[in-house]
Length: 460
Image (tube, rainbow, N blue to C red; front, side, top):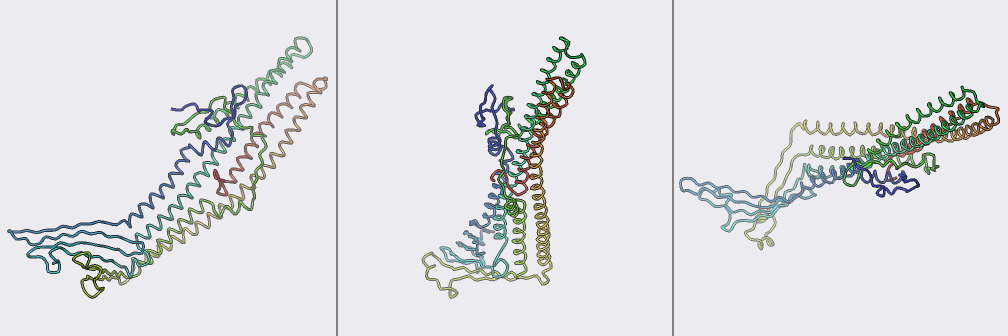
């Protein structure tokens, strides 16, 4: 259920007549703290951390135990018991320790052990495949890369949320200011209609002037109603960005209003710095991390071209004290080696070629993405600077229209102008003022777009 927002929670500025201003900075702080998309962005990093934890599980020590027995016609053929631990290492060597207890009248002679059992401590070495990299180490390194990729993805999600929420706020601010302008226009029209009507009754103005004043009042009332509908829509859209600490959507009170969109804001930025930021753009970083992950896969596939050569060595002792004095490769040991290699390596060479092709594909994608990001940034820089110039030009235009209206009012008061000309001046000024509000909002949104194009947002 939607709830009315607590004003103090937003840090709203209290003004007269029970109204409170929701500043742009407080609004952004609230969006960053409680919006579901912001929380999703934080969870994205958790994905990477959990993936890394899962990949580290490949190096967890493993306990194992085997038991097998056979009895038939009152004969104990064999009773075999083995338990131990295997410890994988980052060097690709597996350390292990085990204990065997084997008995039975028909036990295989090679499985015979002392009465108290036999302990073994040793290791397995990969001298071919798996010497420099194996599946477990490749998965771990890719998970480490994925962690960094999720951090870049988080930044990109937050940057997009920053842009969307900023555009929404300033559109709301412009719509609010337009309502205020049109309310002023309606008030003037009402006052003039009453004045003209009184003058008509006294015989100073013809009846047609009352019709002129009344039609102007109706036209401005209609425009005000339309502006209020637009402001209501923008308010509802703004509410979609407002959530509380309990993950519940909230609504603004009707008494809450935005900053004046016409307030002077000086944006301190450097175009060359913006162009440097583009090389650290989150989208580009994610592509770089994807290429790095593919490079790890390529090294693993290249390692698969090597033959399988695995050596196992175990010290054999009846008790732990004997382990310290057992001579290496002279007595009490178990040694083994395994070798295999496909003759044509067609599967391995195919996998390696595919891995290289994926890297080439992703590299071309990165080059294209860098070009697109650079082009977009230049476009947004040009757009921002152009809108800033337009705002300056149109501010002068509004100032000029205000002077024209003031002059026309003076002429009207001394009888040298008409009500029609005064209304025409007012209509032009009101239209220019609403256009100026929209341009001011567009300028502030254009700055946010420029930041987003450079890969910046909430944190910058």
